[in-house]
Length: 314
Image 1: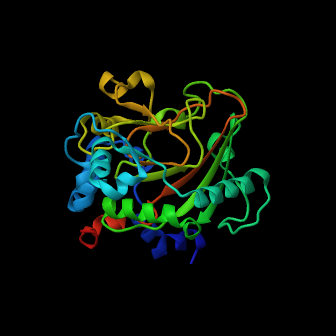
Image 2 (image 1 turned 120 degrees about the horizontal axis):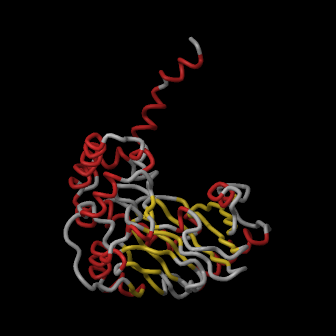
Image 3 (image 1 turned 90 degrees about the vertical axis):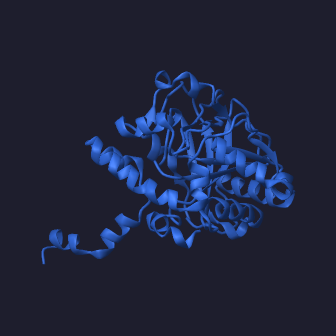
């Protein structure tokens, strides 16, 4: 059989396609609005069938709930944390780790920064993520390596708590270490990811750990509260009509603008957020500033099959 033809008969090709958690880029390929709406509603149906996801991604948001909590709140009053997350789409937890694990993480970042490796990494070479993301317009260098979460037991325990509450079961993932280094001053809206954008159009959890303080000069994570809700009118119109996955500042209405938060946070903080809501990386405001963060993402382990098999998670 001709190899060009035989590749269409590989079951794995179609299984992988069906299993992959839907990306906004795939939705944008659908130009017919009726078909696009049908696709969106098809997936929303299964989101609503998952009792946990329905709590976080549907229903009216409450007003004026704090998004900043201490680690002890997860132990003594975690309903406040999860109610805020459901309402706002983002929370920040401070004083997350004991000093021993934080020091280990700082040492792991030193290995990347100085390219001297003494511990185990999943990928053996540093990934130059900025060349992939920014091509030849690179003003920020992004170096990345991945590590098994077994080396981060405290963060893993917190990840398990949040994923079980959000998905209905705890989800495994890898620790993605990112070292951002500002080479030249950035301009506002310099790249697509410094505009507000969404990663997926379905429930999408991202957990970010910062061992160091992040201030306004360090490209803090930006988010528009409440835009994670799948029944939000503005977001539904955006998904139905947009031809791009980001939104320009002049397209933001006053309600959206007043809900913008910039996650300036102290050292040893954890950001838990839903990146199907509008978010961005704010720009670096000083040369030679360096930001060290660990990303935890879950769309490989909570995929389309997980969404459809909702009874397993209820």
